[in-house]
Length: 194
Image 1 (spheres, rainbow, N blue to C red):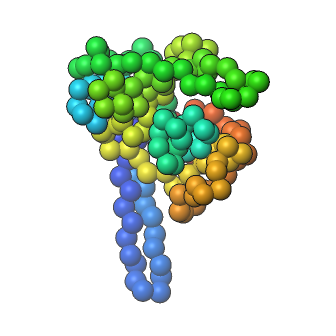
Image 2 (cartoon, rainbow, N blue to C red):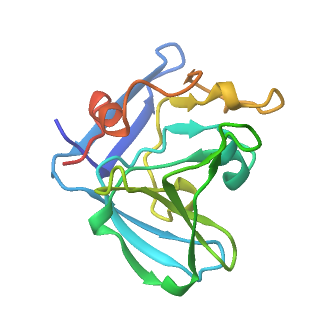
């Protein structure tokens, strides 16, 4: 059953010293995508879009995500590309295609376009012509309160340097990618929003 994450309320109540905790989840059954509002760090770019997969659960540690996203890499959400509306700063948005296998004989440009603010360099969203109906906003650019994942999925461990640590808490790690797509993961965990 689809759940509207925007209206999800999680209440944890203590039921006595020895009884531990119980978790009750109440979810609104309205079937509609979650509206995400986002912006860059300087405030020059503001945008909005609809998402059916709004849980920031997957952390990528590939060299591209670490170089453009900072120490821990990047967390991307899924969005409906046709719903993207730039409210402010269209002229500030620049695109960058990452370089895969940089410095090797296999070096090539990625097909995905990373959109960022040319003023403050904040990453905004990723788009790829192979999946034109999808857009992937960087969770770091989203101002809307996002649902907290119960578990993180950490991908591209083969690219992660030894000094980098995965986040604390429950997680699964993958040498390359998780077998589930964003949509499949959200459906499997009851977070997909129609």
